[in-house]
Image (cartoon, rainbow over all chains, first blue to last red; front, side):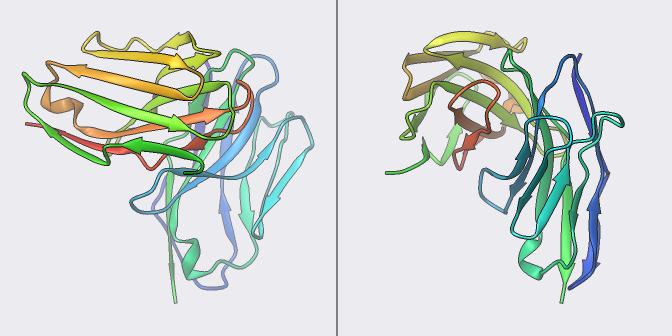
Length: 111
Length: 112
């Protein structure tokens, strides 16, 4: 079946540090890929997405590129802020509506 | 109201109670989802509805009973739950099954 594996947390960084959260997937066909973010006490929010190979999703300084050859969708940000502290989820959707989420990676950014 | 709303936000119930969770989306989407989020466990997809028809039941116990009367509303009926069912229940919607999902704030359920 489909699966998403993302980097285990928690991740703790200082403000302005570089962030990478790794995500790899297994799926039949060509899924859409997503990164969601969850702030405390809230539901998940879409951060960025990519729907086909070599697409780059970007939002709020975060980026991720759909790499079909390595089945990866790693999340990066050049300079994190305290307000980026949250839980980040990598996810995929197939045409059949089967949504699969990674376990989530907790990011804490310290001033 | 905009986006996806869920009521109640918090619910405490005994194992013999019957209660319902409600989700409403104001986005004109065609698909709606129920997820369970437990501490220390990954997000679990429970049910998917597309154009009011159930397309996914992820081996969910029958004590959870979904209902989708129209594309804007989704219910989760609960009866004879177990303490291990305590979790955050999230509702989401999307335009199509491949599209990004918009999540509600969740209902924090505690089963005593």
